[in-house]
Image 1 (cartoon, rainbow over the protein chains, first blue to last red):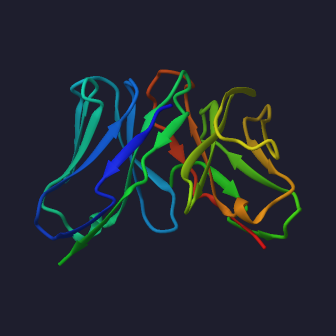
Image 2: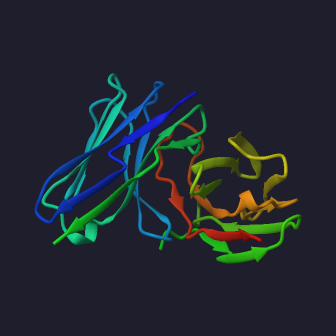
Image 3: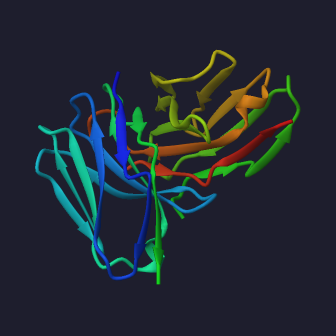
Length: 112
Length: 115
């Protein structure tokens, strides 16, 4: 059974600082997704990572995938308050791309 | 706005009742997925349909069922509702269905409260 672990689960940062969220998964998969969720809202797609060594960047967020280590990271550079949200990683399981196993999420709070 | 439309946005119903949640995928998307988000279970994949056919099943209870119609909209039917079914139910859609790595777009969700 595929398990996905994120850490930390809670992260309080100051504006301007850098930090990394880690996503470990237990079974081989080559499709990993990062999503952002604001309280009570939908999930916004951030990145889709499809191959070993994949790196994608959007603004202050950069995601990478190491399929050999079964690890993905979401790096936050020079955090700003608008990045405060919960971030989920999700790993595709089996043949269906939508059969996603989600991590518990990392609740990020960026303080001035 | 992801382009995935869900109705109703909020629903309060009593235990033992039956409800239907509706989803319209993004234009051009053939796959529809249903997920449940609750405080204790987190986000869980329930079921996927592709072009009208069931393609994958996750942790969907026997009391729940879904279908996708010829116009590609989907409905999730929840019956014999229990308090523990209270959750946020998301519909999502994508173009493909397997191994394609397409972005999966989520709707705003339907909040179900069972009292």
